[in-house]
Length: 331
Image 1 (cartoon, rainbow, N blue to C red):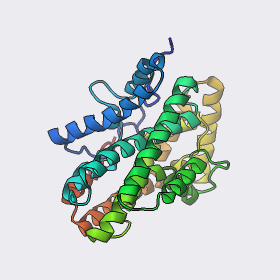
Image 2 (cartoon, one colour):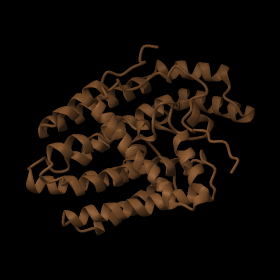
Image 3 (cartoon, rainbow, N blue to C red):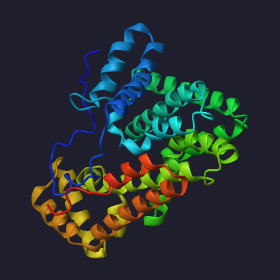
Image 4 (cartoon, rainbow, N blue to C red):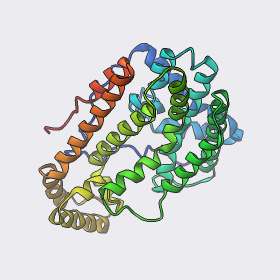
């Protein structure tokens, strides 16, 4: 196959929002080794493909990551580090077999959401390789999650319900009508990320007394903060794709008019119209929409910290505190 391997995540046009990010989380050598292990689970999917497709499939997965990083590095540490932190803390309940299955299933869930998102948005060209890789990931995730449920003596039909919800909401028939609905849809779209956490917490609530629903809520809240962060970073990309993200729903009518004007000119030119974009981005940066989203991100991170404190997850709390030191807000 001669198709060029190009990551849809590459930022080609820096904006005043591009540098906004979570604070850096300290990555220990043990965490790096764990990350590499999770990454190997994703690359391992390619071994189930026809021999002729394996090399290109691995290249597509690797093309997403920056030089010196891996696919798992695309995901902020708190969405997967619970496997490392809590797997050790609750090792009497999270047996080695359950941990291995959980590492496999959760890493595949991260891959599936990103892959599906880019297939639905046409950021990835649909072809037999990408569809077959997606099918293999889907089947592997379902099998792994069901095995975990069986080891915990949990009804595996709950997993099927979660997967059905995920499929329905990844490409909803109707666009959201307001900020609340936009946020609600995203929570449903990442339901696949909470399947392994929900399996864990059901066992841990019964046997170790953690707060009910706390692990899945932690993942949901951090992921929502991440979505708002991503929406700020990608305003120009969403505009070019005619997508209305969380920023749009918080703008007033005059700011929405500026957005629409920039969108129309940019689409007509087939590239971002810099004069109208310059006006729009400055207006957004100085708007209540920007400050409200930043406040919401901080609020969601504080909720994550509270969950960690309630359950004595000290190492996970440290990671969120480090994330809370948001970067690029003063540019």
